[in-house]
Image 1 (cartoon, rainbow, N blue to C red):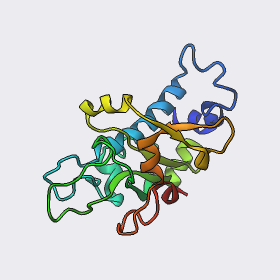
Image 2 (cartoon, one colour):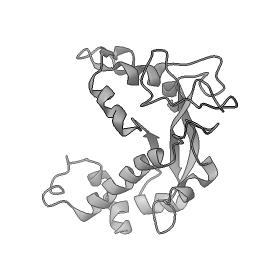
Image 3 (cartoon, rainbow, N blue to C red):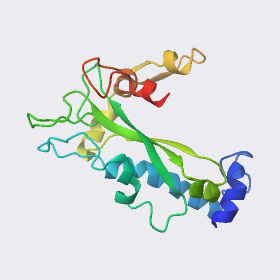
Length: 197
């Protein structure tokens, strides 16, 4: 499996619009999709939602132990190391579906939340996947009951980040989280967008 993914990564990534891979679903493509899905799931599994914790809104795990703690190292040929954590804040009022605030007076941050990570494949991971891979994983809504709020949203222009063509619009809360900064915050002196760049 791993050897064929390393050789076929361009095709698996859509080079030929996934021709002959979808019906039936190609086994390598299935592994490829699951691999990236697990990376995204790790942002949810490692997010501290316990408001009584002074680390509410932070990652439960440090960068150097992240993939081990979310069980993506053992038996997984796709090896990565986290190079950066991503943090976000918001300049508009949004529900706590995105920004969770600690009830503790000693909270690690009053205005920012951990949103995800940047990871780069190791040399071993590069051999397994066929290239040096960079993954940017970003979490979304955490609390199940707050999904309702996500369906009632205002759309705002996203032309500053996506360009003018087609007059793109995005969810106001997501846009604020992605582009807001806060000079008071040690985590968000730069917006999440700038941290990724």
